[in-house]
Image (cartoon, rainbow, N blue to C red; front, side, top):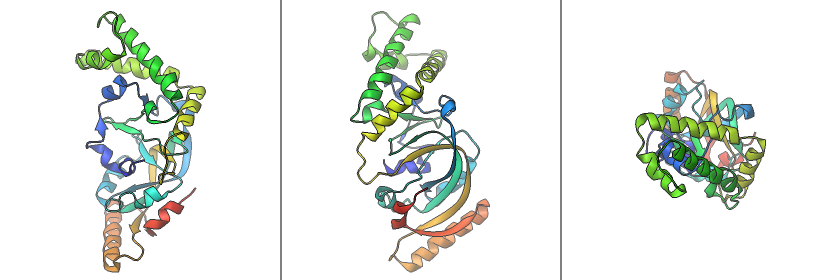
Length: 262
């Protein structure tokens, strides 16, 4: 999984897309409301980010906005983006979806995460979700008088041409349809697909966390690095935690992130 998925960069930036773009491709919405029956409590998880994003993370406490976290570290997380991985945050909260391995979740502008069923060598999730979803979309478009004899290739064009009210109705249709499809069997199919994906150094898990609480914050330091710079980083994190009234709990060597496990 790319490092950016474990930061707060999803608030804005190039990795954010419109929900309609994902719907036109038949992506799977991982909304807490859609997956409510699968919701579980997560006692402990970790999230890597930069100091400048900690305030934003605090504002998301107790909300239904999802953030990607992990409970098992990896080499990829330890060394994926040293310049931006400044702090490690320990959290607890609720999760409606988690994968044994990274599943490359994508974010829309509303904070909802999506899964691309085509991103794995096992295409069963694509065949069991995306294919019937696109067939349902075509039927919906025809029933709503967008055209006759449409096919899946017409979906992006017809969605792009919708009015504001038409888009709202379509979004409701898509999410309602997805909710009906997301049963235990489908969840099993999705996880099987995730486990078939390329892992490499990113063999950590991914846990989508919402309604979370920040337990404490640690500074990530480089073992054998510049001691003065490490001390400066620690001081900055401590001062930031004091300003935000968050608990500071010491330092962790970057290489030790791969050994985290709960």
